[in-house]
Length: 54
Image (tube, rainbow, N blue to C red; front, side, top):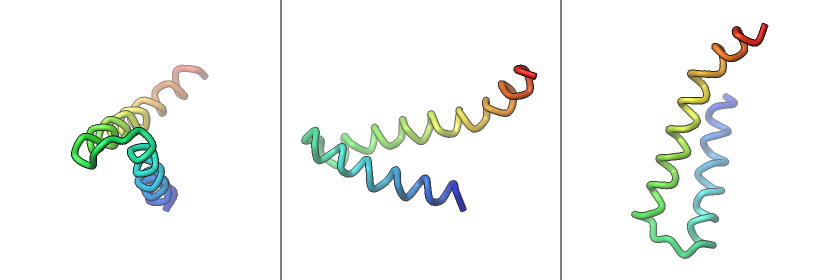
C-alpha cells in the first residue's frame, strides 16, 4: 500500500515539476523514468546496506 501511495504522489509531483520547468510531456517522461529506476535500485540495495551496517 505504501508503494502505491508513493507512486501516486510521484506522478502528481512530477507533473508539477514538468509544468514549472516548461518541459513537454514526452521529455518529462525521462524524469519519471529516472526517478522510478533510482527508486527500484534503492529498494534493492537498502536491505544489503542495513545488513552490512550491523
